[in-house]
Amino acid sequence: STAMQNLLFCICSILSAAADVWTDNVTAVRNVSWLGSGSARILRFPQGSCLVLDGSSKFHSHSVDIHRSGLYNAEPLMAMAAGDGSAPNAYALSYNDKRPGLLGRFANDPALQDALRREFQIDVTGCFHGRSRGQEVFLIVQNSSMPPDSFHSDICDDEVPGHRGITVLTYPADEWNASWQGHFEFGSGAAVSARLALAHSRSIIFDGCLEHRATNPTRSSRPLKQETPVSWHFSTVLGVGKRLRW
Image (cartoon, rainbow, N blue to C red):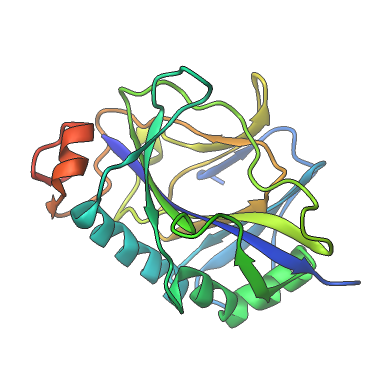
C-alpha cells in the first residue's frame, strides 16, 4: 500500500522568445505534438504549466532502475513532513545523480528538448540540478498510514538570472489503478485545481512555482507485479519485511 515517485529538481535556461486526469480551475488542457513514444498533454494554470507524458523513454526507464536499486540499497531514509513538528507524510532517499544520470538522459532526449522548447520556452540542454550535491534526485515513498501532504511549491525564485526552476516526477509502478487513489494534485489551500493518477510510464514536468501535493494511496494498492527485495533501513521505517509486492 505504497505510492512511489522519483523526484528531480532542475533549473533551466529560459529561451528568448481523461480518466486519468481531472481538472477544475485550469485555463487550458490539450494534446501537444510529441516526438517520443506515447502521448503528451499540457495543462495551463494562471501560475504556470504542467506537461504530462505517457510512454516509455530512456529517461523514464532509467528512473525505474533508480527506484528498484534504491529499494534494495537504501541507506537511512529522510523523513519529510508538511510542517515543523508534524509527523512524516513521506520518506525520501537522496540519490547522487552521476553522469550521464537522470538529468543527462532528460537533457539529451530529443522529444523532451522539442516539447519543453515549445511549451515552456526553456533549453533543457542547459539544465542543472537545483539541489545540493547528494540530493539531486529523491526517491519518495508514502503509504496509507501517513498524514496528508500540504500544497507547496519547489524551486520558485530568480536566484539564477535568466533561468527558471522546474520539477520532474516519474512514476515507476508496473501498474496503477486509479481506484487506488494516491493522485498527484495541483491547488492551494483546500481547493484542488487538477488531479493526476500515477499511471504506468507517466512523467510529469511542471513549473517550480506551481503549488502541488502528493496524496496517500489506499491499503489495497499493488504497484509492483513481482516481489522486490528491500533494504533493512527501508523495511524498518515502513515495516514491510525483507521482500515486498506492494
